Image (cartoon, rainbow, N blue to C red):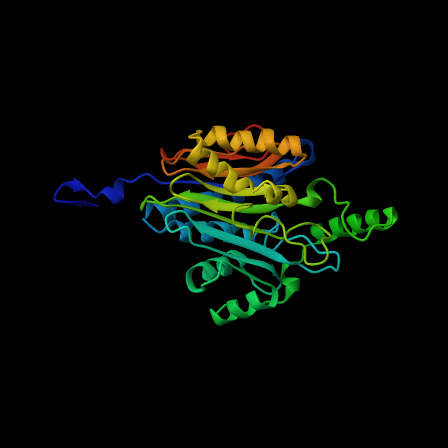
Length: 329
């Protein structure tokens, strides 16, 4: 759109987006070509949808929520439909979102009847005076905002049920009632970070948590500063990994603090936290990060991370394993 032959600054402003669908022991030998194509297609669909919204000038928070909802609706990922099971064979979901311009944030934790946790997190950010709501209270708030409750079994999948029973059998054999999760049982998350035409960066994260979790365990995904953080003065981050480590080392906020106060590049800050700080601590996982110039960083110290991005030049990339996938996928 032009006015008097002069391009509107907002129309020409750069936009960019990065998304993840979880990190973990993701090995090519465990994938059929058909399964790899399914993951790639869903990641591509999600990132292209978010990018189209950003190009139209929609606010970053809308792009983040609608992008994450595509992943929440896919049984391929540990969020929404396809969420892992708790020890008691239920699903307890977490999500958060943060706006880098206002530093406003919203989160829900341990919810069982909210169809889209990221949408509920957005409502908390936009409508509530609070940042985080949990359990039954979060569900009541969501209903007040017009979100109809759903049966918890809507999130069921046979794949996740099989994983739960394997984990429980191993835990019972070891004589423990909690803990002892291995590899991908410990994590799995989806998230998005964006730069919108208004110059704002926004981050969001949604998860089903840890397989066979007990006692209302909450991971890093709904915790501002751990699994999600955004500040226009530094960066926006969404994390995926072993949540206990991401909480202890306030991973998302640490990356942005290094950018803001040490003047590290986004890539340097994200890489140092993921591949140095976390590795030394024994934590595994990864992040997606973006800054106000549209630079993107996506480091991970696990075998793989489901991810996709479209940069400020409109270039698309999709990855699952260490190398990016061919552009033909």
